[in-house]
Length: 357
Image (cartoon, rainbow, N blue to C red; front, top):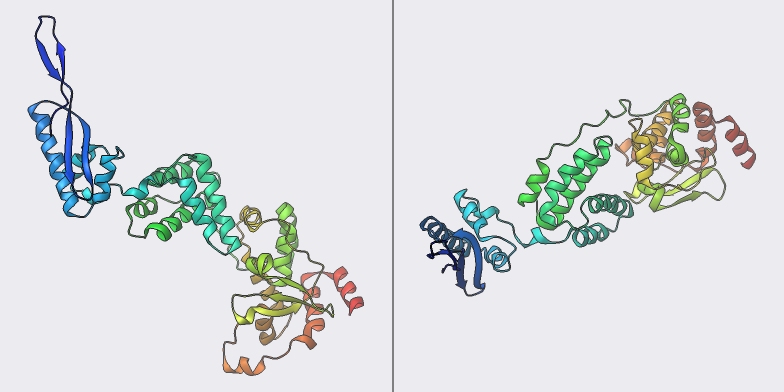
C-alpha cells in the first residue's frame, strides 16, 4: 500500500509531497487491486488505508469476492469499504446485479411470462420506468420507484402498479430477501380512491354507467352480459353456439369454466386492451370483475335456479346435492335468456333473439 506521490514546490524553494494514497491488495481468484483512494498522504490517511485493507480481508473471508472485483474495475470506490465497515454493513455492499442495465433486465423479465395479459401489464410498467431512467441500472430501482410514486400522484393506481411490478421482478430475479426488495417494499404506496362498495351493479346502474367508459364501453358490456373474466374474454376464446341460443365460453381456469351461457345480445370481441378497460373503470372505482359479479346477481334476481347460475358462471359444485342437480343447460337457455333480458332491460335484443330461435 504505497502512496501515489507528487511534489509541489513552495515559494521558499522547499518541496512538499502531495497526492492520493493507493490501495493495493491481491488474492487468488480476484487478482491484483490497485486503486487510488483519494486519501491524503498523512498519518490519518495511512490509518484509513489500513482499515480499507482490513475491510477487504473481511470481504474475502465472507466470500464476497464479487465486491472486491467491483473495486478492482472501479465500480466500487475503496472508501466505500471503509464506510461500510464502520457501519458494520459490509454485507449490504452492492453485488454485481446492482449494475445490470434496466432496459435489458426488465425487458427480458417482462417477456418471459406466457400469459399475454400479465406480459402487457409488465411491458407497460417497463416503458414507464425506462421513460424516467433510460440508462438506469437495477441498483437504482428504489430511487426510480420513489420518484415515479411522487410524479404520478394524480394516477395513484398506476403508480402503485409500478411498485408492485418492480417488487415482482426483484422477487423473481433476485429473491425476496434481497436488500433492494426490502427498500422498494418500504416505499409508501399512494392512497387510491375507494373501491366501488357494492359487489355488483343493478341493471339501472349498469345502463347509467356504461356511457362513461368511452372506447371501453363495449368491452365492459361484454363482461356484464356473458359473465366472462378478463382472460376468458381476451385470450381463452368464445363464440355463439350453432343454434344461436347460447354463448360458448372456453375458460381454462378450471374444468367448470368451459361452459355455455344464455345469449342475451349482440356482443363483439374487445377492441381495447385490458389495461385500457381497467383505466376507464378505475375512474369510477370499478374493476373488470364487477361485470361477472353483476351477471351472477342478475341471474339470481331473475329467478334462475342456483344450480344453473353455478353452471353458467363456471363454478364447481359446492355440495353433493349440486352434483346431482347439474345437467345439460341447453333446454333452459332460451327461457333463462328471456328472464334475464326482462330483468336487465334489453327488450329490443329480446325480440331479435326470439325471431332467431
